[in-house]
Amino acid sequence: MLLMYGYGYRGYGYGFDLTYLLVIIGALLCMIASARVQSTYKKYAKIRSMSGMTGAQVAEEILRRNGLSDVSVCHVPGNLTDHYDPRTRTVNLSDATYGSNSVAAIGVAAHECGHVMQHHTGYLPLNIRSALVPVANLGSRLGLPIVIIGLIFSLTPLARIGIWVFSLAVAFQIVTLPVEFNASNRALAMLGEYGILAADEIPYSRKVLSAAALTYVAAAASSILQLLRLMMIVGGGRRRD
Image 1: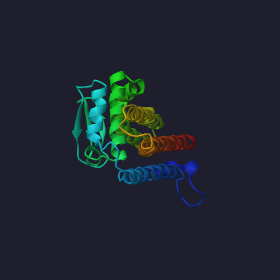
Image 2: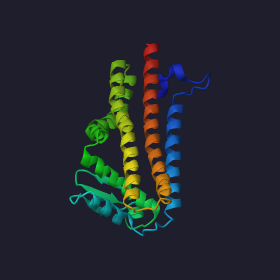
Image 3: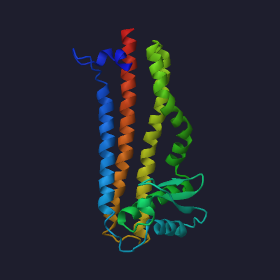
Image 4: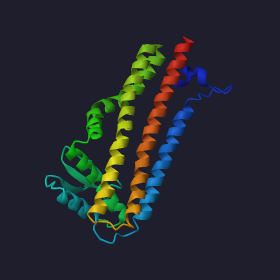
């Protein structure tokens, strides 16, 4: 249905909405980032750390050293489904991380503990991201449908409201970036300071965390491109009116 509103951005004589290129670029970025994190993790998952500590043991050690006895380490199913849940105060480590003693698993476990430290110290970007969760979920679910309805019924003001609603989800993706980069920086610093990884092992974990961070960059870029596309479509429809 959106093709009928992209008048100003169609290819000459082909009836193709050129704004779809923005969606394609965003999808490609996400695919490339996902493939890279998978291949990077797989590569460094084969390198055993000299300490021999598993991801779970590393998380427990970091929490112990910071006096965070009220945070527990749990095993969750899946591959790279690792996350910190501030509601239950649990560091949840996936199959690939929990019992593995690779430099990749250790880096991921420490990264999740980096989120724990952010929560413990009241890291501002994390607080902002947490506050955005409800409206971001609303924006991701309702933003695009509102835009489509506005375009179908030629209600440009409604379509513009949809764009603003969708922008809430985009804002969440953008705020996520400093949160993830900071968690990785904290993780690498703690791994070195606590002697969990040797100096020549830290670059391996850094490569894993850097690859993971690119997935968030790609997601943010994809969301921004989608938002730009919606703005172009609604703008084109308004000019036609």
